[in-house]
Length: 84
Image (cartoon, rainbow, N blue to C red):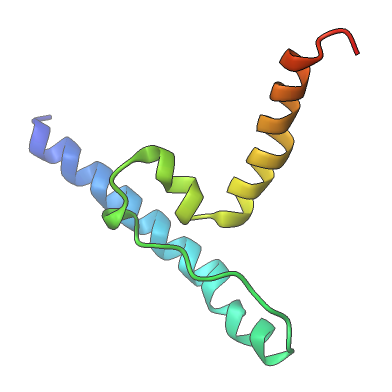
């Protein structure tokens, strides 16, 4: 396969992933808001995200907060206080 085909396939897979995420988590958001529960914002379109490090920060904010809280802080605590 040439580079254009691989690039187009990768871009299409990303767009389908975004569409699936919006359908599974975006449409039920209307029902959640109707019940008076505050829901998270819709994910940003992945074609507007330029750095992969921003992908989870802005696309799936719940997963990002989970990874930061349980992953990053545990590693910092482990390397700061290794014998506790």
